[in-house]
Length: 374
Image (cartoon, rainbow, N blue to C red):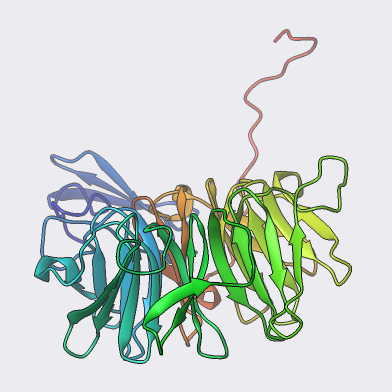
């Protein structure tokens, strides 16, 4: 462990004069110029990626989109500094935007389709990059194509191969034969946040004000689920932030007022801070190999067991880079390793490598009050 001027999490000084290990397994280090440092026993291993004053680091703080390029690399979109490509093995970063490959630094949607990268931006439409030549080959916007909005919030590819774009003024389907877009599914013109197709082919679409939509592409039946203050079995909030299907084919819906599980009758069961979640503003959901749901919120990361209802919360005190995560920012690779974007960078971890902390701290009575008197 050495002092790194670009890393606020490194030891504060290389001149270390005393070391002490406590009963919890943590190490205290007294330095000459940098005060006292504490290195806790690593029960939870969160790797942090954040902007540093050097070439090999992620370029932005607000990590928004994380996808794989199909060749072993990750493509990371930020809201404040464009695109990054990361080699997960050696942790080497390449900043796409320094070569002017994309036209806007505020990235909101990413989709890899074969050897093409579709990029949704804030108010600048869609760019398409050839991942082989690393050159921009297409640009779509409201001036030259049938898009009513240039704010592209999400991009998704259906099982049919169709590409959908969620915008703040509707959902659009890309028509390859015409190289243009068309309205999709007779949906109302509103702000859409998520597009997800489940294992049965049903398309679930989240919005910011109109709740959740269920679209059956075979029957073209469209169902809208919204928050009803008089119905506890309704959606918790009309702002949907993420949609997930678990290994039991149950649909989970993240909202700005908690987590929801929908049953076959269209009834929702809500999970909030009252059930142990650290916050009600839910950003994303990933599932590990044991069936636990890892839920990013505005107040930390939750490990939620759907079977027992138990929740374990992780915060900066456990090694997170920030308790404030970001919208649409989560990815799980083939090994089960998870990535979550925050407003201060990105964290990476593998749930199976966490160590159970069995240490029971001693209890000390430091005071006693009776009827508000010592």
